Length: 151
Image (cartoon, rainbow, N blue to C red; front, side, top):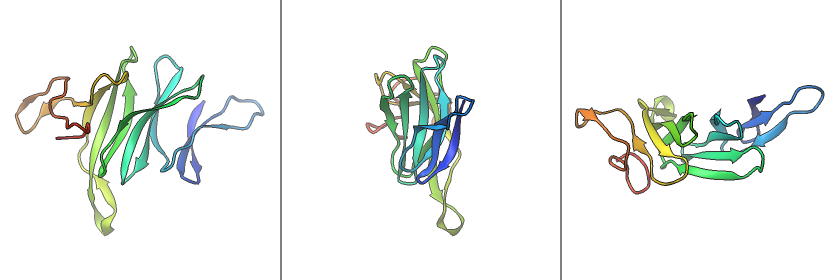
């Protein structure tokens, strides 16, 4: 069983196997884990980490322990709610542009869903209607900057 647990850096992802064994950290990240999902194969976890200065989407192989950066979100943008496609090839996630809210605390504006090829073959692309053009956008590089953020 995987779950988020308080840690010195925010939240860490821990695993419990049952019985008398103590839970073990699967992922502990500076800035804390904000969200995660288990890939359909069950062999990896995709997670979002970080905070106001930018967040990252990462994948960790549960067998080898290898931790791979999938996407670094620009400063002032929080990426969260990762979801892996059933075939394991695409990652959908929300991008929230942060603005100063009450007392200067950052809050996210209405999120936008983006798609990213997990194999790193391209940058993220927005999904759904493009409000500025009044039509749907296609999977591709249109609408994404070289850094992979919103244009």
